[in-house]
Image (cartoon, rainbow, N blue to C red; front, side, top):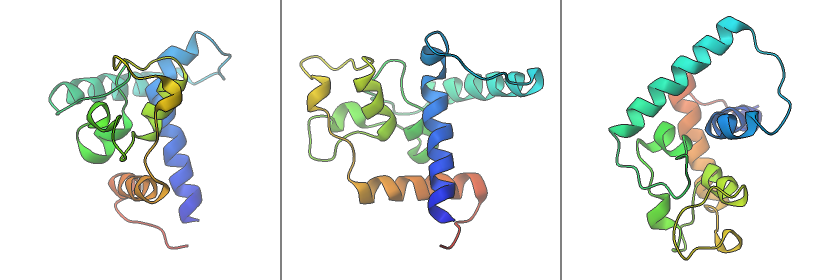
Length: 134
């Protein structure tokens, strides 16, 4: 159950980060107008919050994952280290959204599995107030 919850959160976060880019290139399902309106408010609020955070993101538009988990993004700093970048940034690089000079998408590494799981658990805790047992 815990892994399914983490997966759902991951899909939602990564989807929010690239929704604007992808919505013009792929078919999307219909969303009720009231849900669409709430999503627009969430996106606008998140963009405003990110302006006030220490953000050194390596993709453009900047990821949402790091803001939601840690309140800032170190991925541009981490991109050339063994630490790697968050999953949203990694996918962004492979979608052509990377913007760190001298870095090729093929060379970008993601966070280790353990670190990524820890971040998703943190994210789940932020949204649910608790974690689920397996």
